[in-house]
Length: 244
Ligand SMILES: C[S@@+](CC[C@H](N)C(=O)[O-])C[C@H]1O[C@@H](n2cnc3c(N)ncnc32)[C@H](O)[C@@H]1O
Image 1 (cartoon, rainbow, N blue to C red):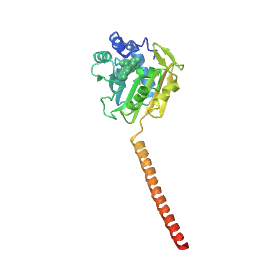
Image 2: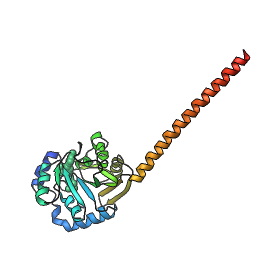
Image 3: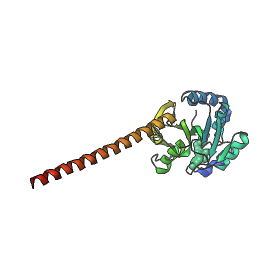
Image 4: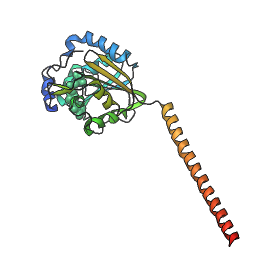
């Protein structure tokens, strides 16, 4: 992966950027295909299934996942990006939508949500509510056992390059923790990949059974405590009556 050359900053500029060729990844398609197979699919144990590429730009990475056997869909806020994606990769579904809003998919619709360099990751404050809210919103789109895979540049020093903040790995991990406990973090050069898995059906069932048990035993304890209090009050009452 190379540095993102001359990334436009305000989202409206992306339309222009994609209309004039975008990031130029196609020039090294074979290289990126091998890179994605190794550092996304194999490293994170992804198995082909329904994949959402959130912030897909002009669709290059969506098309790479298609080629790797995933049923991939791309979404971006930039109409220019989606227009370029549709004309370059016909047959792949692409749509314009805002990741900050309710997204037009049922909860649990995807096995993988892939999110590479979406603008949120380059915001100066990764703890800003708009940024943190993105992560649980994406997690909700995952089926049980599904994976949110985030990928972004890191200079590990918070430096600003082309108007984007390149956060330390730990700050990006903390951001992803808003979706759960990451199961893998991988650094490749100046790029970091972070995977968070949505708990599987059995883990969710075990968790809700455990919380039912705690609530149940809490209720039982409360009933016993009340009965003991009533008994003690009756005994105290009887012994006071005997003394008078
Ligand atoms: C640096 S580009 C990355 C594009 C692509 N993922 C890649 O790696 O080449 C950032 C992308 O995030 C998109 N984006 C920014 N805010 C967004 C939002 N709220 N919803 C969806 N996409 C958004 C931009 O339109 C832009 O295409």
